[in-house]
Image (tube, rainbow, N blue to C red; front, side, top):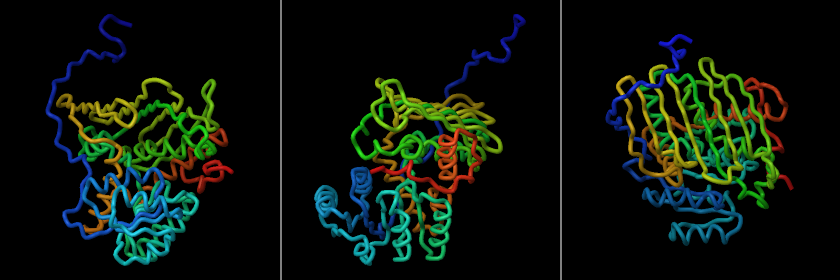
Length: 374
């Protein structure tokens, strides 16, 4: 190596501080509150849904759960005037309900999405909205035929740091994204002894799906090739492997994602997005990577982000759906858009199972290794 070079690895460049672009990254809601929401399924995660809706002044008029006490508890805590049901059919017959928030377990989810669309309701479905890609395409076509919108609750898209990064990319501030590196470390040991402990692909199927979805959105084009590996940590007590590595290859670009769900101390998340004309770096606690830097030829910007993934992300998904209904357009998180992310997740699961690289779109469904086992 000559004295005047270090093979272009010089990191001594000094970037000037510039004002952060004013990007509308927080959840947006329609000015007119004409739509009324019915919630089907009142499990634990719906605390985040209902908190976000109440904070935004949205109107939930019906709650349904097969265990009446759960629906009544949600009503008492969040929406005292809502009607409660134990049968989803009765909620779907309620003409006051125009939008259904569907949070049932994945197995029966697709059937109730279909029922809600046929009942003339717009639908926000918990992720994954289907376990079979062909069925997902059928539901997309059905929504079009019914002239109703079907969206997926990929709430991570509205985490403040994720949404700000996406808007910066969409504005072209870093050029075309060419590589993405994600590192998420946290302790997922809380699932020990719960039904989640019986889902073999808990890591890829339930948790990593958020970051795979981010990768597909940041890249703004379909993934082509997928490869994944899983492992257990030394002394791991829960059944599913909680350490995973995934790679997605795009026509122009690569995404590398690493997950360690057995990190006992100092949960951490890092997202590095490299574009042809700049980069974005987001770091911090898991689900709170608010230390964001936007680096362009003009300099470095450090926006002061407010809000949180939970519950704000849940407000973002419903708010975007309601805005799309009012504006007669497809929502950013439409089911058609989300199928691209599901294809990538299914391919990663197949790769981990079969020990080979899998072409995205080849794995059309997921099986028992992604469901709660008896």
